[in-house]
Image (cartoon, rainbow, N blue to C red):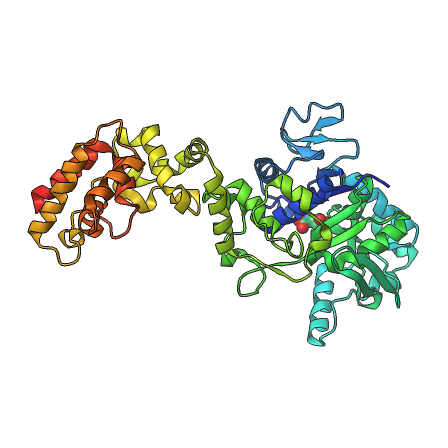
Length: 509
Ligand code: GLU
């Protein structure tokens, strides 16, 4: 059997769409699972949609997420230090690695043109000189009559050989259209959807080569997949209607078609198609918001796939996904993008981090916060921040939340006498309670100032009526209705700051 080869074929529109990431991930997982190769090629023939810097951004995102390619487009000079590596003509600093390139469509224009001309020569395609106005008019009429938007074949039926030659000589703009056979049913076995049938009478003679000399997606995609020896085309369901055109192209060129797997749509929770309007679709935005790459990969993998009946595991590393992944377990129905699920998966991954890792990943988020910018150097020390993080770790859903709900660690706590009171305690009792805490805490040495000791000693001192001692203490240290426990807060704040907050409050009652 041939080695499995899959590819990700994004258009450089400026960001990596979560749907695009899912396609890339499934193609990666399927290739790796089967000891195959995963490739990246760039579909940049739609010049209207082109965005400067988008190719580099896409590659960076894939690299960051750990979806390494065996072949195709890369940024890394290390990987491209390969005999078959070349710097791209159109994108300096971008390398194409492998023997089946170019892997960037804008570098293959002559190749596509040659194939398109060949199709015309063999009678599988034809020149179309229709002006955009005529086509527009035709489309309007069809819409009015509720007919499918099918090209009426004016140029196939009415333009003689002589006229064609004259037009070409006069440099009349033209497109090349595929000739779709009539009255045929084209059948394809999709790996996910099973057998799919298309009636060719409902398929238009699609344009293969545009008047600007650029190929359309259909022509370029088929030629690339043949050139790159793709064995499995894995892509979004929106490309399913293109199947008959692609199958015909493989037939006309005399090439064996690869296998196809069309992935289910991504949906908003209200079941509409996932769109930018309803939330973020750029993977880069999730990274910026503090979702870990492991969580993003884990979450995206589960959009339309699960490891099978009876499996309850929900947290997977990339390697575990490679091991478990199977295209047969990809669902046909649309997959709902549920941000709550992403938050939960992210919280699970945050829990797995060591404090050092959590600190390293969180620091950039702290640096953006006003409360952090305005605090003392002492409260910005590695040690202090790590303590805060160790308290927060189990409660964080994403890294951009760090410190947010515990800002009292960074500035003085609010004073609210009513909040300090346990039940209907008098001022006198409140003062006594705080003095007791102060006394107990001042007797703990610096070495013994640990979470465990603080908890043990304060609990013992509180005896039966815990709330009477612990509530005023906690409210003093934090100034908040809700917060981590008084032991945790005192531990982070340290002996000096804890005493000072207590003394301060006592003085005010
Ligand atoms: N450029 C297409 C996309 O971004 C690729 C479709 C395919 O994989 O064939 O969806």
